[in-house]
Image 1 (tube, rainbow, N blue to C red):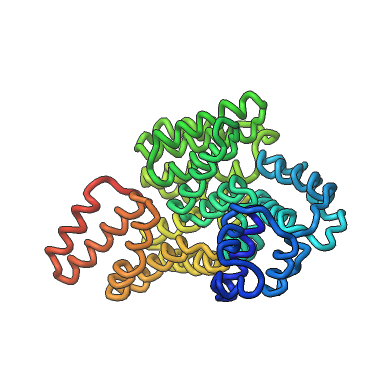
Image 2 (image 1 turned 30 degrees about the vertical axis):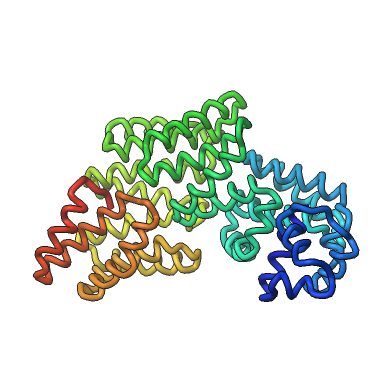
Length: 411
């Protein structure tokens, strides 16, 4: 009922029709208003006339759901939510075998949500990008269809795009809908995002809650992923000794309990620790080992970025330029705005384009990271902006930005 009303509202606004224009000669404006808000019983003859005026298939709104399709779809969606990849593959095949014909609207939108979640689960991020554009445009319908799946999957999508404030807003809405039910996958992704937002205590709480549930289910792969987040948080509070011991222990876990992406993530963070200890040779070695796994390049752009930064810091400008160019290509290919910005800044530094960089930091970089909620990254760019202002003899403004960055920051 609500979904039908939201669909009518979406198609009406998409065609720039007022409620009065849509209702003209069919029904009252009050009926349209109540229908769009799910406050009135459906009149099939009226809906048929409305669909004709909106030029949409009436079967979508007044047809009957395919029960076999709905049952398989729900099982597929559940596998996606619980990170059961083999079963998700199997149920996707079963879903695709059903003759869908004309799809009832709830089935259609539920299917697209499941497909979006499946693309995220299986690292098909380019396909997820394309589908996200469709979903975001029809947000009001998808929210009404399955709000929990919508907010969770969109939150995961934003997390993988490095858009952390957007991610946590959606994930918190999913958590509110979840109520007293358990979803360790939701807690795990929230732990990851809160870590990036430098809210370490909140991140640890979610990671530990997820770990406890995974432990009860003997889901060892995801237990280790929770431990990775806890190890990262040691880094973020500056306890590199504990972090190093933690990740070296995880590194020794047998291959049966580690996905390739998880092992790559462990190597990345061991490298990250060496990087901050300025042990650049060790850091370079581990970053390169991380990149040797069969991983989604979008998730490991930070390994490439930090390799660039090592080469930049050690005056190996040719290698730095090579990695920057590759990083830029990948960032644009994967539509990853965060790393488009980070690689471009490094590229401008390599080209000694100080004036261009000063403007770029002011107009693009600082506003982006202020909006993204990443205080550690933001302080790095405040400091860099302050240095450039100082070079241009703008001492008062430089001092202001040095004050913004006065706490310890990381690259």
